[in-house]
Image (tube, rainbow, N blue to C red; front, side, top):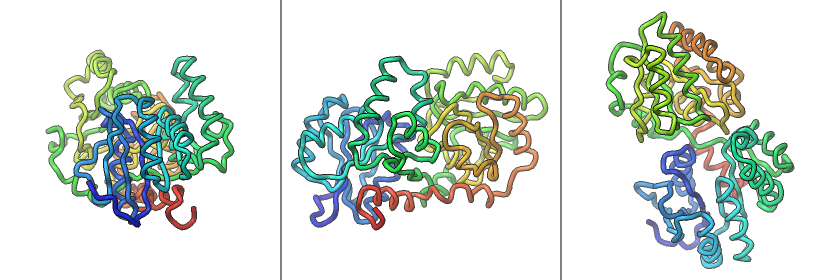
Length: 374
């Protein structure tokens, strides 16, 4: 933990994450990168929630707000804002965003407030309950306009949010996620999380929460088609409620001996770097962080053309094939093409260039009012 660092501009980041989500990885990269550019950063945490910074970088303080619930942090957050008077506050996800807006109003101090929404919100909420959909839509429609800006990771997510929440498009800023870090190759060189990656049989890889949104059932069905014609294996890294369902599906399709679910691993990059092909099968995304990570490591990749992000990342298919959401036959065909004729590593890596962490940190600080161009 750093000292107060008088004289340096200060940004507060208010988050409540699972500890192993995409937002966690974003925070773990963005916060140190902002601090390295001369900004003091306070990470304001809800008890029992992520993100976890280990070690805590120079220029960063981690402040526990004293409650295990987001709304319970409202008064502590307002007191923090009055006491510390940061230049700006960055929040992420709707419940946290609502709390940040109310805390700024209660604190009554001048500061720039930037909210973030990391997914294609209309699709994300389509599977939620009626009350949840009503609450989030109206909070975005009537509250988000009182923030100084709303950040999203892709043009598709921006257009969706503007339509869904009736927000002016010029109130929404597209800022690339901080995905590619200088130490990515170092992490990729570490031992892989499963022995199959050290063998000669090609491995197809998926990474993410075992949830309906990630739709790994489509990947399992596609792999079963692929497996009919060639020797290969499938590994999916991640935890979630669909684990037993995926194992059962693999058993019914007769591919259990070539399918592995090692669970969540903190370093998926060693697997990404050794995989013969990477597949993103999400039904919706804000960007698709794991897709960018795989591309940065030069791994041939295919993605379902979901809203939003993969089409932008893959430049309409220039850096890897796009297939319809839920189409296991098209996915199997695309994977076969990647295994038979993989694109050049250098071409694949070009797709990840806009997502380097230093450029993303510069863009975030610009939106937060701390770099030229804000």
